[in-house]
Image (cartoon, rainbow, N blue to C red):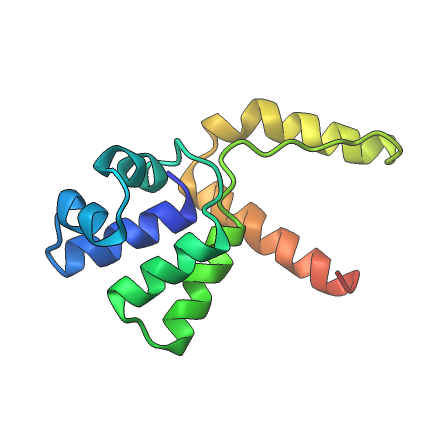
Length: 123
C-alpha cells in the first residue's frame, strides 16, 4: 500500500463510504480505486488527486497532505545510479534488497534520518 492509498482508504473508511460508491462518484472502476489504494497502480495524476480532494471536501492542510502523499506514492520507483558515487549505488542496492524485511519502526527511523541529512545538505 502506498502512503497516498493508505490515506484515501483511511478517509473513505472514516466516512463510511464503500469502494463502489466512491468509484461511481469519481467515474472510475472499483477495481481501479482498489488498485490505487493498495499500491497496484502508479502515482495518480494531478487531476485524479484533485478529484479525490474535492470528493472528500478536505480542508487546505489535508488537501496539501494528499497532494504530497501522491507525489511520494510511486510503487514502482526506479533509481538510476549511473554517474553517482559508489556509495550512492551501494545505498540504493542495500535498500532494494532489504526494504521488504525492515520493520515499520526501522522504516520510520530511516525516513527521519533521510529528512535530517537532506535538510543538512540543503536538498
